[in-house]
Length: 192
Image (tube, rainbow, N blue to C red; front, side, top):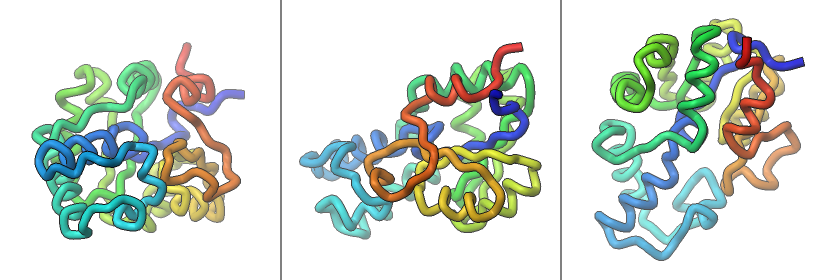
């Protein structure tokens, strides 16, 4: 049985948006921190795994959060296509820990077709730990997130999580996971 489109929600950064690639690009091109790769980001707290000062990590992430378009943030491969096929059937719920909703909406406006954009509902919680409440409020049963700790919290709240595999969540959970949007497309009932 495939997951009904209206019962699954998604995190933004690290799932729909390739935030790690944008972070690495900014760190290298603006601040000359070019010695690490995506695979080196083995912890959600970047300062614990890569040699870059905490204040600079915060500065780069703030740039991405406040101006997702200007920072060069791009969608993950396959995200636009899969979400577009889902939008034909139902509203798509994106629940992000970001504190600001407007930069997310502006970003979606640029990267998604109008029909898809109109079907995407964005909730900005401002806190990773507060997603449960919004997932229940929106009647979702499944949720895709790249933060293992969030997925473990969801599993304890009668929500079925899927960990979107990233270097920072490897070997940190025993939950179901997906490697990419092709994997997600196989799980979700996107065709009529």
